[in-house]
Length: 109
Image 1 (cartoon, helix red, strand yellow):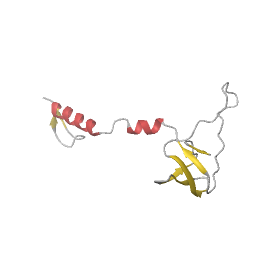
Image 2 (image 1 turned 90 degrees about the vertical axis):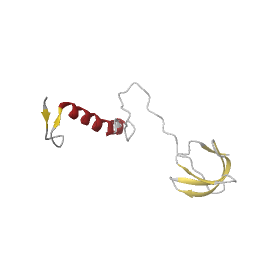
Image 3 (image 1 turned 135 degrees about the vertical axis):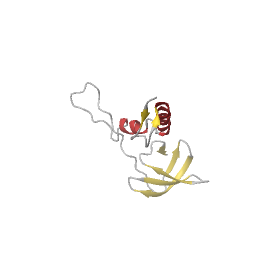
Image 4 (image 1 turned 60 degrees about the vertical axis):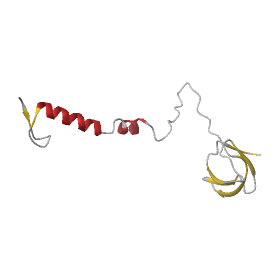
């Protein structure tokens, strides 16, 4: 029977070494690093030579205090506070919510 040592922290037979390696592999988070590396943090830029149209940037919606708004999830509300370019505070009657920019689910009435 073959004996292994050193990297596994002591002498062990070949079968014991294989079992220990399997246990170590089972504890390792599989794919976590790979997933973090494959997702881009920034959107891709459009090349002028591309045959596809450049994505159209939507204008940032501007709200003022007192505006009546509707939200896809929360319904009708009134803007009660503004953080310029970051968020708006909306009173939906039973609850106040801080809605972050770009306000894709919210529209002014």
